Image (tube, rainbow, N blue to C red):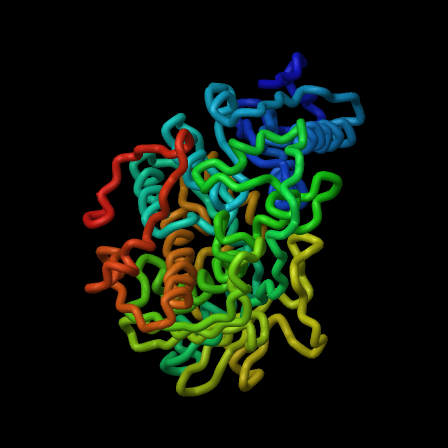
Amino acid sequence: MVMANFPTIVPASVFGKYAPSNRVNVGVIGCGRIGTSWDMPGVLKQDKANMMAVCDLDLKRLKQGKELVETFYAKKSGKPYSGVKTYENYHELLANKDIDAIIISTPDHWHVVPAIHALRAGKDIYMEKPASLTISEGRLLSNEANKAGAIFQIGSQQRCMPQFKKACELVRNGRIGKLHTIYVGLPVDKASESTAEKAMVIPANLNYDMWLGITPYAEYTEKRVHPQNDYSRPGWLRCEQYGAGMITGWGAHHFDIVNWGMGTEHTGPVEISGTSEWPPSGALWDVHGSFKTETVFANGVKVLASDAYTNGVKFVGAEGWIFVARGNYTATATDPVAKDKSVLALAASDPRILDSVIGPNDIHLYQSLDHHGNWIDSILSRQPNIAPIEVGHRACSICLLNHTAMKLNRKLFWDPVLERYKNDDEANAMLSRPKRWPYQENFEFDVKTNL
C-alpha cells in the first residue's frame, strides 16, 4: 500500500455551502482512460463530493490519478492541496471507513469482484458498464446490491442525454404506433494482432498478476494490457479474456436504450440468433468483427443489431419511426462519432412526431442531465438513481446473449425469469467462466435459482 501522509480535509472554499456532513467521500478504483477522462472529472465537479482516495495496479497511473485530483482541488480553492490517499490494493481502500462511496473504472474482468467486496464493506457504488463479464456474475452482483440496500449506478450516461429520454418517452407513449422492430447500430473492432509478438518484460510499476485477476495466465505484452506512456485505447478491449468486444463495449449503452424504450428493463428476450466474423486462430486481439444478430422479446418485438447499421437506435412502429444517437458527442477522445454529418442525434419519419407533447397522463421517464451528479444526489437522498444495477445487468445480459449466439452460430432460446437457456447445456455452460486461483471468489450463488 502507498499512502500519502497528508490531511484529508479539503479547504472549505472548494465546496462552498456544503458542510462535510453533507458531502460524499469518494474513493476511486481504476485510474485509467475512462477513469481519468470521464468518471473522475464527472465526480470532481460535484460540490457535494470529496474525492479522497485513488487506487490502481499501475503505479504510474496511481501517481497521475492522485495528481489529477489534487490539481483540481488546488485550482478550485486557489491554495496548494495534497490530501489524496493512494492505494495499490483495493481491499485496503475499502477498509477505509471514512470512504462512503466507490467509483469502479476498471477493465471488464475486474468489475464484479471488487464491486461485491465494496458492497459488503458498506459502500455505495458507481461502476462503469458493462455490468459483468458473464450473466451469472451479473445476477449475483445485482442480488448483492439489492441485499445491501446500496445506491449502485451503472455508467449508462446516454440516459442523461435529452434526446434518448425524449425518444424513449415518445415510443413508450405510442407516438409511432405499435412497436415491432428496433435496429441497433454498433461500431466494431476489425483489427487483429498476431501472438507472434514476443512476450515483454513486465513493467516494474505494474502488478500484472493481479491485473490478470480471475482470467487465465498469459504472457505480458503491452498490447494485451494498456499503453504505458499514454491513455489511448487499451488492447484489453480487443481480447476476449477480458471482455466480449464491442457487443458489450457499446452494446451495453444501446441495448439499455432498447430496454428503456420498450419498458423491458427488468426482463429479457426469449430468442437470440446471430453470426459474426472472427479473427484468425491465435490472434492476440480476438474479439468479434462484423456481426449481425436478431433478438426477439416476448412482446413480439424484434431487435436487429449490426455494425452495418448507423450507430444508434432506431425504433420502428406501425405509424412511423424514431432514430436516436449521440451525434458528435464523445465521452472520451476515442469514442466513434457520426462520419456522416447529416446523421442527426434525433430524427423521425415525420418531424411532427418529435413535436408531440408528453402530457401529464402520459408515461414520464426518469430525468437527469448530469449522470455523476445524479449518483451523488441519490447517495445523499437514498432515492433511486437513473441507471440502477438491475437495469444495467439486464442490458448487459442482452449483449452477452448476442455474444453467445454469435459464438455458437445458431438460434438460442432464453428464459428471462430463470436466466437460463432452455434445453441447451452447451449454451448454459457459457453463463460463467473458470476463475484463476487465487483471485477466484467462492461467493455463494445458485445459477439455477438465482438465490
